[in-house]
Amino acid sequence: MKVLNNRILLLLFSLFLVSSLSSQEIQMTEMASLEQVYGEKQESPTALSMNDLGMDSGGYVLYEAEIASTTESGTLSVENIRDYAAVYIDGHLKGGLTDEKKELSFQLSSGKHLLQIYVENIGRITYGPEILDNSKGLFGTVNFNKEEIEGWNMIPLQIKDCEMAMLHFTAIAPTEKPCFYKGKFLLDTLCETHLNISGWGMGEVWINGSYMGTYWEEYPQQSIQIPADVLAIGENEVIVFELKNNGKQIMSLSDKVVFKQ
Image 1: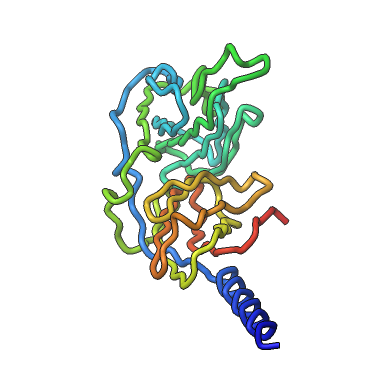
Image 2: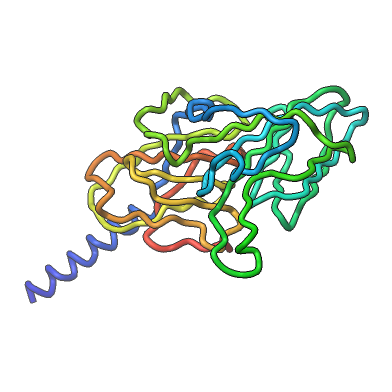
């Protein structure tokens, strides 16, 4: 009977730990600017693919150009975008583009504006009819209100290659621009867990300096697996790169995989 009671106590304690783990929220308390991971800028009259920029593997590039509007609205259209792009005007997110959605309309005041297109290369095609056309990034004609945009700056973003410990973080300030966020959480036991990223847009995650993977609001799975061997008893650190900054600043831990509702 005593052995049975001990097993029941251990089971109840385990359930308590899982419950405590699954309900723990992680508040982001610091941020770091994306400018800290800018690579060497290249200039061109037209937008160049990532391949032409010497980036044949996955990664991010920021494409910048000046646009001018004579109306209170605008339409951006691209010939090729691979694989995903977040479009910002004067630091404000206007929407996304993919190779299946190549046009985006939005409101803006008349005058000159800074267009910033952050493009992610998810990876190379290894099968199918497009295997011979592995160009990535933004390339071909880019039009604003049916006029071709010229004069591009292209900046590789060393996001996955940078050392997290080298980033300079400060207190969180309001911004819509892509950036890094940092938060901390406490553990009193070590076990495999999952980081619930529901409500966030698109980005990358590191736990205690180890890269955990990427997330996207369009994926059916809305969590990232965290192996027990990257965690520590006591304080743990999470760093998030968020491409589509919607002001979300809280993640949470889960004892199971989270799927989109």
